[in-house]
Image (tube, rainbow, N blue to C red):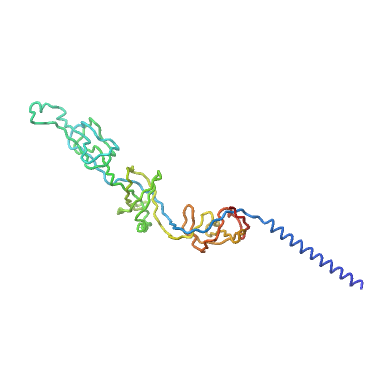
Length: 310
């Protein structure tokens, strides 16, 4: 009888100890759960928009048509009406030349015979309208017949020359109209013209002509940036760039998706086109109500506890 009482007492003590241990484990679990870190985050939804991938190349301005104003006699330049940068019209007088014989004898012949009307002066006119880019001689210079005096640039012959790598020639068929960005921020609309039938042997680039109509003078050799569309998506599924994370080798990408206002889970994604601000998500397809962490997502684990900041 005494042994039975002792055995029951021991069993009761063991049960009590087991109960206390269970309570302590539950309290520890609750404490651990309460102590789990909560990361403050900001979230964003999925977007739908047209997205394009571009190839950016430099293009240089050039004037294809230049007119050379030349002397038509041997003689001295008597007057100059040509100034660099000046806008001139067709047949405008730019230079007056006098032969050395006329300069030597002066008006003597006319004094002997007024009906002769000898002057020895020749006036050189502009062959076309444009603006003067170069003046080679000044008043008093002696020039020979056929010598260049000035250069007139035809404003309507302005183009931009694009040196396109030959492997990207297929882009020309989808880029008939393109945009050029000038260094001062001005945007010009251009249309692709012809291409020169030669390739640079060193760079393997082919020169493409881009026609523009700026409405004002543009200096020659100005460098503009040209964007050629490589791929275009009319209704791409996009997220901000900050929402997409990757591993060190950048062969795996994922986002942190909010599932119940306090938990973020890791979802692997396949990305497509990206620009300065957005990345296209090719798969999986998300719903319009889905939310994704855009700040505070770096380094957090799968099923992380988060607090959404307003």
